Length: 442
Image (cartoon, rainbow, N blue to C red; front, side):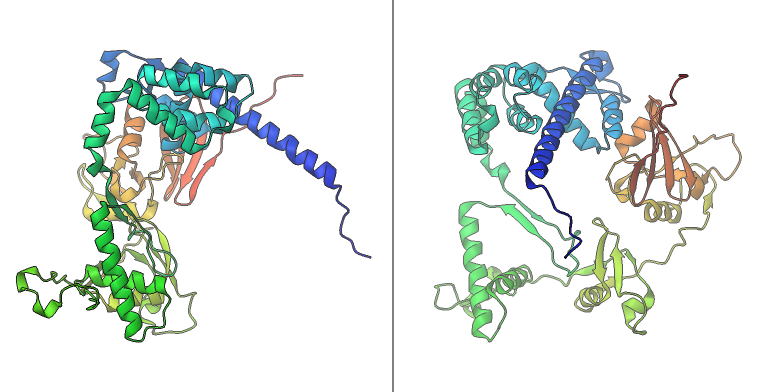
């Protein structure tokens, strides 16, 4: 005998199906609410567009109205969304409601899921009115089952038919699609980083040949590591000018290459890390203390091991150690501008923009007097307890709208939206603390 409850499999499937249906319906209603909110805050007033404060933004394709930016921020905050997510949601709703009426009609009738409709809307925002209308007419009937590749072919057809000039621009700017991103500021727990890119075909072939040659040479020299590791290490060798040549591949012998054609030597990297880590963990002077981990503040706020930090520093050309700043100390300056020490303290204390759900790094944000600075006011206005680090966009929101915020304790901010919603933001995230409505009598 066991105490495991008997599960009615039929009832479980029915419940899951019902909940999925209700969730889809809720997502559809949210998309409809986003469209209605955008309509209430739409404007094409050119004078208003020139203002620095709540300037309207274009979030959808040609012909869709502009929307007041600060209104989008409040809508997103109420839904627990970042600025980018809120703009995407409202933009998709506008695209559907104004430029894809057939597809939008299927959404409002409950015949097309919101996420599928948003995929189509995001793909059509670059199209002209005529091209978007063509896609809408073609896709609406079978929008619920169109694949991503089929949708892209339809978009390409619309561009070729209705936007030949744009098609030529795309072709002429093919070189602008090339990129290479190295996420060196977001290392994993083991100290590795991801690379993503798109290269010109000849460059890709040359890189492949050089990387593979380096991996093969490591194997010849006795490396027992798997191929993926050896290829990755080969790429690092290339970056340092330590090219590995396979002399059977037809590549030139580096000793016979003229000096001006040899790969350049690269100076040893310099390590400047903002680390939240004990001195014992760095030096290893005391074992068994703590968990041997630290927080790398740079851009990714990634957790790293003390051993990984020691390895980085051991192979670096130079190591810069920043002085410790007491985050609980009250630093005060005379005048309007904060000192570098005060600025650094606020950045390390907050880490992020204090606006609800914003993920902008405080290191790239403004510094803001929470209570407006008064030139004729008392001393001590430029101080730790009166500073936040909002990003430029949300600094404008605080300055030019009825959003307000205060710091209720060190690094903890309470915001109030124009419609009275309240949010608590600290370095760990955002919480909606809006009081529930009070029921009326009876």
